[in-house]
Structure formats: C-alpha cells, structure tokens
Amino acid sequence: MLFNSLEFAIFLPIVFSLYWLCAKNLKFQNVIIIISSYFFYGWWDWRFLILILVSTLEDYFVAIKIFNSKNEKSKKLWLLTSIFVNLGILCFFKYYNFFIGNFAAVFSIFGTKANISSLNIILPVGISFYTFQTMSYTIDVYRNKIKPTRDILAFAAFVSFFPLLVAGPIERASNFLTQFFYKRSFNYEKSVDGLRQILWGLFKKMAVADNCAYYVNHAFANYQNQSGITLLFGAVLFSFQIYCDFSGYSDIAIGTSRLFGFNAMQNFNFPYFSRNIAEFWRRWHISLTTWFRDYVYIPLGGSRVSKMKIVRNTFFIFILSGFWHGADWTFIIWGIYHAILFLPLILLKRNRQYTDTVSNGKLLPDFMELMRMFFTFFLVLAGWIIFRADNIAHAIGYIKGIFNISLFSNELYTGYRILKALIPVSIMLAVEWIGRQNQYGLEKIGICLKPVYRYLVYYFLIILTVLLTERHQDFIYFQF
Image 1 (tube, rainbow, N blue to C red):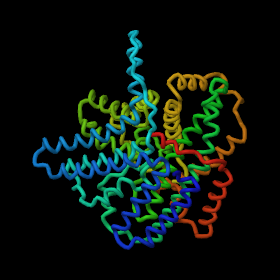
Image 2 (cartoon, one colour):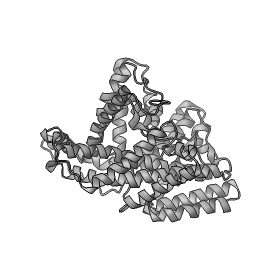
Image 3 (cartoon, rainbow, N blue to C red):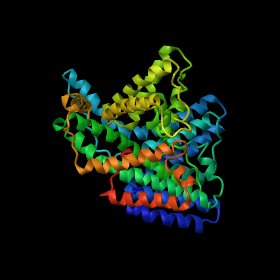
Image 4 (cartoon, rainbow, N blue to C red):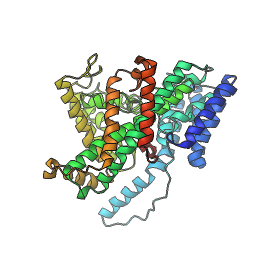
C-alpha cells in the first residue's frame, strides 16, 4: 500500500479512529498496530508477512537468550545466530542472483561455463529496513545497552509498525521500542504537526519527485540522442527526485507516527544545503548512516586508528552502504566514489568542520557559503548519475554526453515537463531554506504564520499537488 494512494487515504483514517476510540488500554493499542501493520504490508503481497513474523520471533527469543547467557561464548553464539538468520534471509532475496551472476562471469573469463541458474526471486518490500532494525536490537542487548523485552506484543508492534515498515527511518530499540511500553494519549497539537509533515511529504513526493521523474526518465533512457545541457538538467532533476522521493516518504512516515503518539527520528536534515561531503552524509538518510557508524565503523576502530586503517574503514563503510542499496556494481562504484570524496576530509580532520546550520540567523547565505553548497551539490550530483544508471557503461556514456560542446548550446529539451518540475522544485527549496533550522521544511511556516496565512499556504500546496499529479508512482526506495 502506497502512502500516495487512494487505498492509504481510506486506510489511515479508519486505523486512526479505531486506535484512539477503541483502544482502551496499552495491549489493545499495540494489537491494533500489529493488525493494521500486517494488513498494510499484506496489501502488497501477503506471502512475505512470514518473513516479518520470522524476524520478530527469532530476535525476540534470541535477545532473551543473550541476556540469560552465563558466559561470553554463549552470548556471542546467540548473537551470531541472530545476525546469520537476518543477513541470510536478506542476502538470499536481495543478493543471490548478483553473486551467482558474478560467479559465473569469473568462470567464463577462464573459458569455463558454470552451470548455475539464477532464480526468479521477488525482492520483499522493506526487507533491508526491518532487518537492520531488528538486528540492531539484538546487538544492543548483547552490548548491555538495553534489556530485552518480555512483552512480545510490544516487540511485534515495534518491528511491524506500518509507517516505518517499508522504507524507514530505521529506528533503534532504545528510542522507539520503549514507546510501545506506555499507553499513548491523544495530543491535538502533536497530531496537527503530524498532518502538516504528511502534507509536506506528499508535496515533495507527488509534486516534486514524480514530476522530475518524467524528465529524468526521458534523459536517461535516450541519453545518446540528447544534448549535453539536457543531460545535465536530467542529472540535476534526478538529484531532486531522489531527495524528495525518499525524504518525502520519511516526512509522511514520521508525520503518521505522530498521529499515533510516537516520535520517530529525523531522517533527512536538508542535505542539499551542505558545505562539504562530510556534512552531506551527516544530513542524508541519517538513520542508515548512523546505523553503519555505530554497528560497523566504530567497531572497526573508526577514525581512532592508524591512517591505513582509517582508509580501510572509510572504503569498507561506503562500499557496504552502496551494496545495501542494491545488488549492482553501479551502487558499489557509487559507494567507492563517495569514499574517495570523504577520505581527504577525515584524514585532514575536517569532517566535523560544519556542524551548525548554514547561514544561521541570516536570510541569505554569503558568497562563499553559496559556492560551497553549489560545489558540494555537484559532487553529489555526479554520484547520482552512477546511482541512477542501468550499468557502468550507461553511467560513463551519460557523463560523456554531458561533457561535450552541446553542453553550452541552447538545445535544452524545454517541453512543459521541465516547467512542471522546476516550479515545485523552486517552491520546495524556498520552503526548506526558510525552515532549515527545524525538523522539516514546513514546520516553521506552520508555527510562525498567523492562522489565515498558514491555511493559505496549506491550501496552496494541496491545490498545486493535485494540479501537478497525473498518476501515482512507486517510491524509489521500495526497491532497496
């Protein structure tokens, strides 16, 4: 079930009403969450509900076993069981064909044909997200950061919570699971704020990302016949498409969570206003980058080791991040590209250079801040071309197509599609710049404006979204 679908528009008010009117105690609230979450996910394909159930039961009982273990060897064995089961399921569904294909390709180099068949495997939606969420729970229990819960209903609700189930944010048990232990009470201001964030997420997804998609698909599918300036615009619009598609999902997910009395973590912190690559990665897909930092990078030694190990750790974490996104060499090369950009900053200890809000307290950035943001954006944009391409040859051909004499021509494809993309992109950037010190773009406008102007903004965004929407498109990160 898509957030931007008619089905969800019917589903959400029904669940919201049942949750607040019929849930008289904590167990009823958690049961309603579990039932509605399984219905939400099963709407896509009910067969894969078994995977969520397996992850839930396996990590629930393993965490208790870890806690009750009398020695370190037993604790490690149970932890490895959790990791093996979770990653085993993930690798089979997501990476089996990738490894088989590359295994066969290696044999073919030496003139040998490997008779190994690929499988027609459907990738379960959200498997990369809820797998990492449950796995972090058992790791934290092993590290004695949290105690395992004996409340299986609370844990099942935590794992399957439908706003976050398909594409995150990837929550930690220490922050989110504890919220299922206490009965929630309806809070009007919190719900209004949630609706406002949902509106902003829908605008970014339906008005910005989906309209960018038409131009982007045209540019990438026909790159051999396009001018350099058209391809450059295609790359720029893909940068906004993927940001508004994914951060729009996160806004809807976080806003929906607030409707049910939950506080989910911020997943995007205006990354395109970053002044270097390190700042970009602190602001982009925060729940995943901090997951890799806490459970992979720091255990490897982080940056408090020799320079050679810092290089190793940096490349490993970015390659792993790329591979998390998909079973394709384009994602791995994308990860290597960002490791190359990030490495000088961490070696020179400049990775924490910008931790404040850009142009804090000022209406506009100064010239140097503007240049840093533009430079960082175009570094990120180059990586997005690799990320979006069908394969490495496609990425190389697309980049070559940009850097030719037609880049400086007036042969820009200027159909109405580009206007339908540029208008909402401009509005999105203006709103997010105004609200860059808040949790999401529309929050400041919703708080500071007088009610009459506030509702004018809301109705304007709703009307513009309706007028610009032609058909619903899947969220990009559903494939990851």
